[in-house]
Length: 220
Image (tube, rainbow, N blue to C red; front, side, top):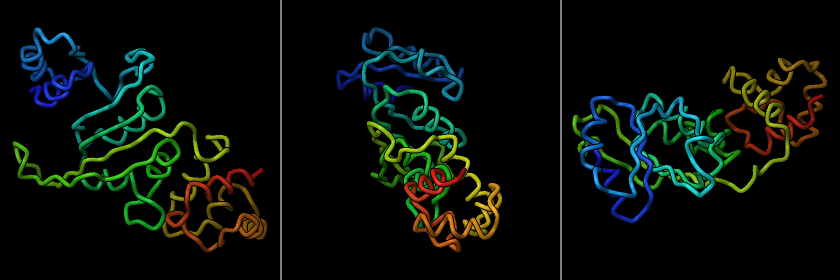
């Protein structure tokens, strides 16, 4: 209904408000009429061409993201919208914890590794369901992601994600099993992991981005 858009506009920021809900668009356009620093865009944020939508100036993504599309939107922005330097997003608690989780955390997974490849992240605030209308059944968190100037590991992305996906494909399996599934002989898999300082019995949820990168770099 424009509450976030108006609050951002009042700071003097140039605001590009992307809204997909056709029932809300008329209200958003009405409340922003005459506000020169707001541009309302009727578009689906899960399908938008970020490179064409944003110019070369630095941008901040500030959004209350629908829970079912939060991860795809965040990943698309991190991967495709290089001019977005910061993301400040309200998401379901479990989603937020997954975005910023580290090795060994309950919600650590492939999404966590992909975020760490491009940004640093933190949970800045927990938000009670009582502040929403209608009241949701889940708790929410505010997440802040800061884009890194470059990835912290030097490895071909396709090779890295192949290892990450294999590692998390079967969570109860060891990294030895993952490396075997990637084509290495069992004995060689053990040697390869040990050469990279990684216990072959370790599971993917215990490995850092740097450790996944070392495995990817060592594989043929």
